[in-house]
Image 1 (cartoon, rainbow, N blue to C red):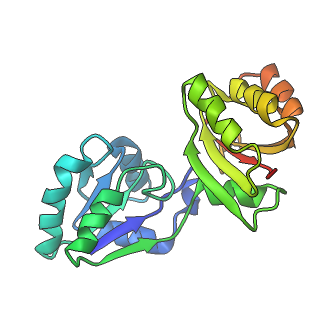
Image 2 (image 1 turned 90 degrees about the vertical axis):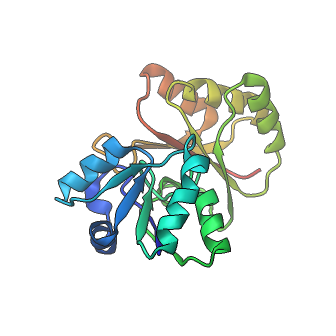
Length: 220
């Protein structure tokens, strides 16, 4: 069986008991970042084989992994943090496993998307997740024009190095819309700043933000 296992996005106590048991029992663990996953396993005194599995080697390694699964091995897939395959590698492996009638199961757990939405007061009965924002300004502005009249809350990731510029461009294209900026979720210096775009630009311009950032933008 192929196990898709969610791991903590920050606070290690957020891992589930089931995830710990399976990580210890499987024959090996496919890890997007072996150093981060190794540190997590060491924290819980789990000794298991780690195999590097990330975006640039997924195509090369997936056939070998499928062969091991067909031989009866149990294998776990984890990302560097959170739930695998969401803006992370892994879906190609899952696709091939299902085509080969190999059992695949997902162990639910931490997700920065769901954590951000649940921390926000923006209505999220419906929402759209867009992943990482484009890096180039032209593509980014084109994307912002696309969501100008979007009817649901919009959720996306952004780098701390580009967040101030992104917030300013959002205000320029969308007007002074409500937004929740979630930074370092579940970690020691967690920050959830909810306001309008203009105030968000002012807030984060005062002190350069650090850490992973998830944005929840109000619908049109």
